[in-house]
Length: 247
Ligand code: BMP
Image (cartoon, rainbow, N blue to C red; front, side, top):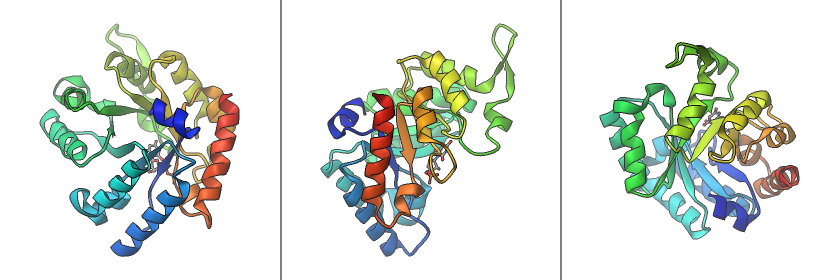
């Protein structure tokens, strides 16, 4: 990811989430958006928006190949959240389908939870990005809850998850752009060891400048780009704004 970001001069991960439409239109739109934004993004994130209607081993393959052709890494945002055996099989399918990284939820824990996902990822040289604090309005109901730590102290779930991200050697941590103060807190735990991916700028109200100032490394951007009349232009503008803040 780091290499792609340097080569493309961008820290924008495109959330390729076209609106609901018939399958042929969705694929056509997604291809067009990818084509027009290719020079302004450093990776592409897929979600159920495309996987459900198009299928991992059918329609989505066309888009993964297109991303590969543009030398853009692909992330499957599947937020893995099940028992270990199921998690391992989910991870294997997505990695065999061509994704270079996936997202997972640390709520399920390590043993018989995410351990098989990390083992599968390491074996196949792929990445795992953990959810540490989500961007939606009620994120605090889960990620902000006080948990009891191993030392019998109370700490918010997100600070425990950030430490898990370090301990498990995650390849990234998702922290919502809508909570810049959380980005700051979590960034002070992660340091430079685990990069922060921040979704929620634009459509969800997050501000690029605050995210970057507080320690986000990558911005995940969907609707602001995908619903724009000229997605390429918007992606370029966001890239420039985010880059200025990094410098
Ligand atoms: P948008 O820029 O259109 O709001 O899209 C953000 C993308 O990031 C969506 O795919 C969403 O599912 C995902 N996402 C998020 O918005 N917040 C999170 O905390 C985690 C996510 O994966």
